[in-house]
Image 1 (spheres, rainbow, N blue to C red):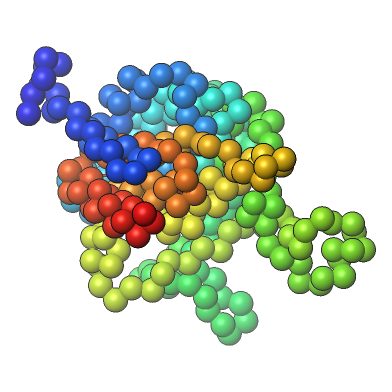
Image 2 (cartoon, rainbow, N blue to C red; image 1 turned 180 degrees about the horizontal axis):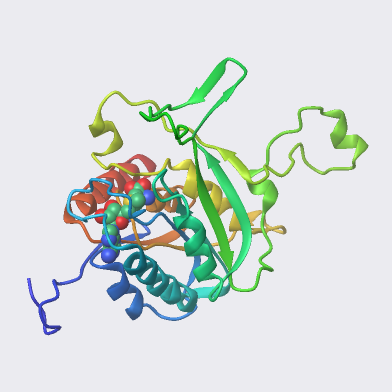
Length: 284
Ligand SMILES: C[S@@+](CC[C@H](N)C(=O)[O-])C[C@H]1O[C@@H](n2cnc3c(N)ncnc32)[C@H](O)[C@@H]1O
């Protein structure tokens, strides 16, 4: 369908629970969003490594790709609140190992890199393996077991709720000895989040590059301060400009935050709507 904006397709919007899904090109939608209106952005863009999405061709030239992501990040810098957090998940490939770092160097003009989190997807400790192993047929390159989550903020001074995703002390005597209030310590900047085991593609919602729901949940909970008097978590507004199958919105809904997800592919929008509707039915 066409509008008065030349040949641009109509922007479609769907509301499910506290979440809004927008079917359109994200740059176009971001340009229309009000300044300082979002608390947390969690997103994973296409990595420009030839992933077979249903419609989006993941193969820009490197300079086109860098300029495109910079333009999107520029809008995010405008839209995010001054004390907001932008969690940017990306990975390079064996052929393009510099890409995430090139991108971060560009984004220095817009953001401070407050934390660099390593998302470990699979790991071997001694003879034990944990998480999914995706074989890589190469004599030169190692299997890819981790990705980056860059935590970008406007000035590097955002106060985080580290114990919101804290882990219990192994040695409980540390709690009294060091005068801690809770049996929790900071999780650190290495997050082990394996994918749930699946047998079929359909269990991954027919999407080649989704992240586990725990990933956006950790990001939101890390940013979300608690009102200490009433023990009520802050109401946050969350954005994912590359929503895919809606995982970030599911996390936002789980945590009772409002959210907006933007996705260009109508098939992925349908999947996100279905996932959210199912979750909303379970919750209500
Ligand atoms: C890495 S995936 C995100 C997956 C998501 N995190 C999930 O868990 O489902 C990137 C998504 O960006 C979408 N995309 C590509 N270009 C876009 C654009 N210009 N605007 C909005 N979405 C776009 C692709 O269709 C793809 O679904």
